[in-house]
Length: 251
Figure 1: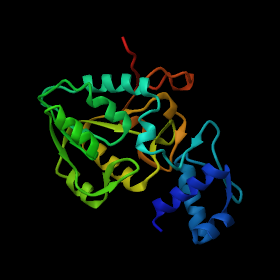
Figure 2: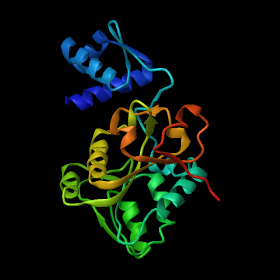
Figure 3: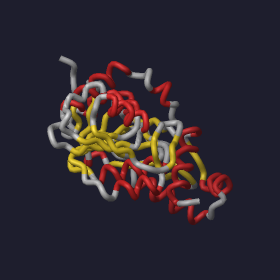
């Protein structure tokens, strides 16, 4: 098992139980005690758990989510907030932009509001590509393995395709946004594609409705300071002084 996969499993177990022991993890993950302790130290340094004597516990003010709902379910959640965020995000596209559009329901809400015809799009979502073409926009889709749960293209071919692109802007979804853990997602393969695409973007935007804040999924694909976070009004005052968070409101 790869390190990222093993650490994702540790966070998944923590999300279910709130506390785990080293001996429990060595048994469940078939790893040595030294390997598990090293993983716990790494995850502690990343701010993803609280390392204690003999194991680890979850952090306060953090909700772990190791799984995600199907796209059909998520399309019906927080629709008003996603609509506002999507409309604002679409308004950021300018003539001549070369845009990466990540898979996900938050980025999908952007498409109906894209008015700029002199822009080119690349996406790893089949449904996004279909909608962009229907708007008579120029779109390219990454190759690779199709992941049904998120309707996303992932895998080595997608990563190879991304290496030839240099995007002016990129718009990404996230399952969780946390001040220490950054922007996270449950699946290592999808996180790898997100991270690779984000690294090819000049301007980076994360679209996240308020329910995503203080949520953490197993894999961090973007540190909080790396991108501008687009959301609607946040009730948690602890987020108010973070400069790269932009609360967008319908006028």
